[in-house]
Length: 438
Image (spheres, rainbow, N blue to C red):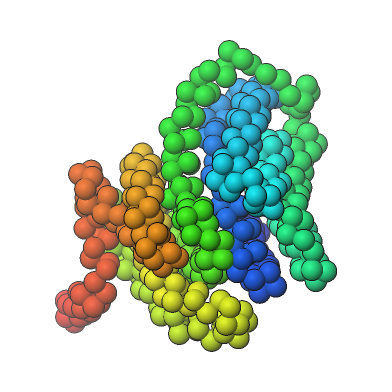
């Protein structure tokens, strides 16, 4: 019970609730709206995510470092909010112009849905106050407000489905969710922070240094979003929103699979840190066993999902989403490189080598865009799924082998891909231990 109420336990509950609620509501919406309308919403959400990454400006780490170092809270947060307000305004206008150019003047519905969701970028600016909570390792209020926003938004979306509402109202619900979280965080910060008088200050002299420090994180964050979301944007623009809707359902099932490695990695991360601290020489062996176990668990989850996905889609979604089954048969295997990439993140953090993850993500983003350009015109959603699988493998595994300083980790990742060899080695190890003990 104590672990459940700890900071990490609260974070797990928050993540599980949000992912579960989001997946459930998305499936209900997909069934009710059909591939075309659901594809429009998926396209819009992915496009907004790209601009939201730019609007956040990579300020999280630079701001948190300044707050931990004892800088004046109101001035640091005020400066960060001013920077984000400027970038948010630019991204909102730029996003609206881009959608106008991509969709054309005749696609007024798609244009206005995107504009309504792009407004969520502006309303997230007060949410910069979350960085104050993170600097104090206080997860209670951010988790409560994030879950509350998702709950309210989910209820509204289900009501919209029930009343057969127009598509634009779903975009309003998306923006409302962002507003509840963001404004709620700012109010909580004002109520709890003793330094909130004046509530907001600005230090223009510090803004330049903050922007400079944020640039590497901005590039990294933008690369991650391109890496994860560009397929939906390109598919909707290059083929059709109907095809995007089919692809989106497959994606939602795949995202559920990703929960397995993420939860396992986060749960055992403190243990890995202690193992490395207590005996660095034996850490490689410990990490190899951990990687083997997590990858095996992910593989079992993939196999179970491949068996169940056909009946589930036929029963719940009907024949109009039948093509999602074939796409999922490709998408599901992306869980393997995603698992290896997730575990690599932990290894890099333990060794203080996080900078390599940024380079890998940039390579993955460029690979994904190039492959999508080549494959989507030929094979549509299937091409997007193949492109994602290859780019995840390049970013998550191949770059480990190409970078000399982490090549040893890349070799461990390759070993983990050979479960029978690893199982044989483990059995032989324990058998020999038994002989020595005897």
